[in-house]
Image 1 (tube, rainbow, N blue to C red):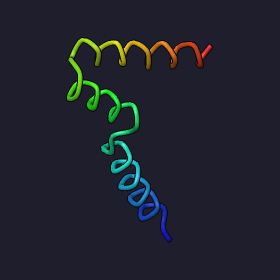
Image 2 (image 1 turned 60 degrees about the horizontal axis):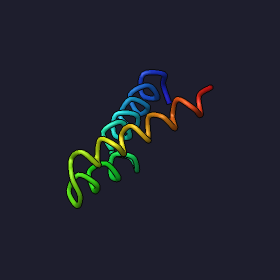
Image 3 (image 1 turned 45 degrees about the vertical axis):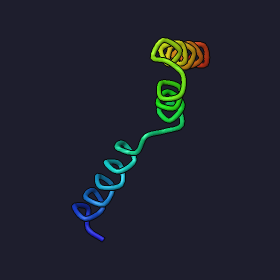
Image 4 (image 1 turned 90 degrees about the horizontal axis):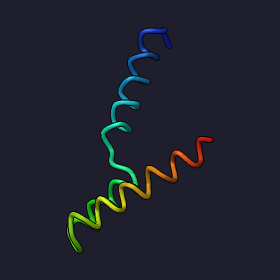
Length: 56
């Protein structure tokens, strides 16, 4: 496999993974749909707080 082919394959896989929503996105959308946008924002703040706390 050439370098160009390997880089192209990598770019395709990374692109697909980037476009695929994760669990956090699913939780936010579910909360917004079933409850309220305000509660969905609370979920966003909770997720971001956890991300910041885990990074330190």
